[in-house]
Length: 67
Image (cartoon, rainbow, N blue to C red; front, side, top):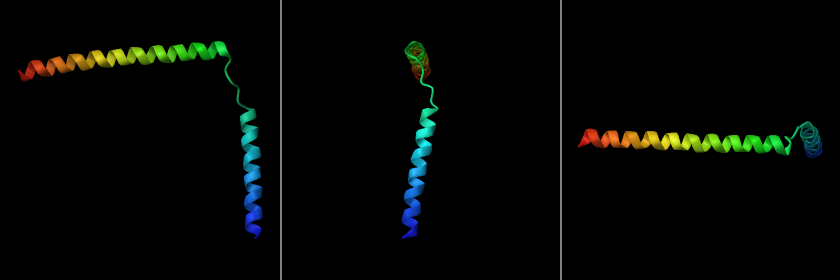
């Protein structure tokens, strides 16, 4: 029975620690969040285009070699 009481105390302490850690978080403001989101989207699209172009070149190169 002592184990269950100890487990409950550990859970309470864990939640207290979790709450303390969440209070330390510094959330970005809207302007910086928008800038970072646009940057991530732009880099993702650019990388997708680069991969598509390389894939197209490799595909045509392999078809040329095979024929």
